[in-house]
Length: 146
Image 1: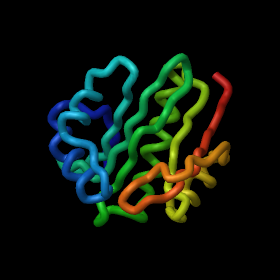
Image 2: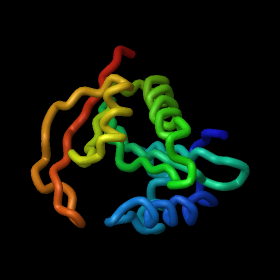
Image 3: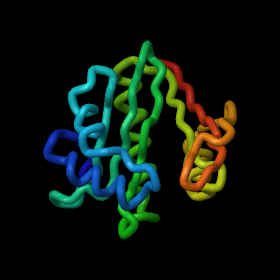
Image 4: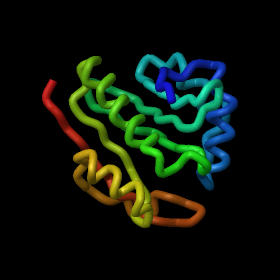
């Protein structure tokens, strides 16, 4: 597996993975707008030429919001999400960011266990944040020294 910055050639595969993994997927157009976004950092996990996972984030003044993360259903439970988040944090630190915040469905136990393992702490809750199905989001944050 190889981790690299997302480029335009990855957009169709990332958009397809969005459709497979989320009830409200981002469009290919929205994903493509992140490729050259000055605030954006999106990474893909590749097996050969196939995108098997990705993570996307935006940073403003050292504070980063993880926008999306997904791993292809056939490639889950292999450490891909953990590798993506760790590489994202490594690149964010190198760029001078000092925190990463994200929302996760309250019912997503697997993701919550991963974020707990990586040192994220719950800092809030957004009632009714998710639709299809309607559900609260937990706000998690990880901070570090730069």
